[in-house]
Amino acid sequence: MTEQLLKHGCIDDALAAEVALDGYLREQDWAQLLAEDVQVDWRDKGQCVVALLFGRRHRGESVKTGQEQGVKLESPLLSRLLAERVADLPSRERVFQTNPDRFRREWRRAAEVLDVPWFLPPHCLRHTGPSEDASSGQKALEDIRRRGRWTQQKCPTIFKATCFGGASRSPS
Image (cartoon, rainbow, N blue to C red):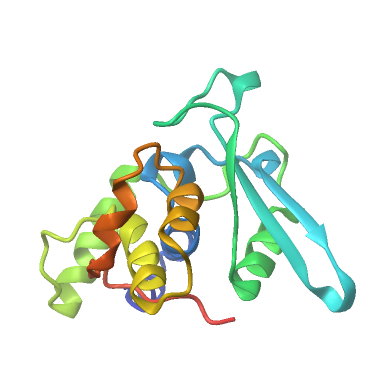
């Protein structure tokens, strides 16, 4: 899906999709993300660690499971791309120059081109990463629950079965 979004010139939609996949994000999470919410720690040899902050109390925001939450991106390539993207953005600028309606429209168009069933919504990205991590044994279910900010203990058990989101992990 990401490749198809890029072919269509939907760079922000493609990047939002990959960030959603890597960070187990809800649509609300990436849509509200401002440059000041992307915390970058540059390390040796140009490597960086990126953490995303959600439900910022000082702006009166909340997310489904509360306020002041976050997640660290795992893909080094995606972390670098996002760090470079926000480096010159004003702190109150949206990271992704798209919105949920446009994202869903472009997602559907990409799905049609790829002949992917239309009923797989973009929200499936949130579940693909945890599904891959659970089925590969990369992460324990409790770690998946905490990373995805699920409050219910039973939620991660659904990730034992893979949800096809039409995307794949970003290359490292």
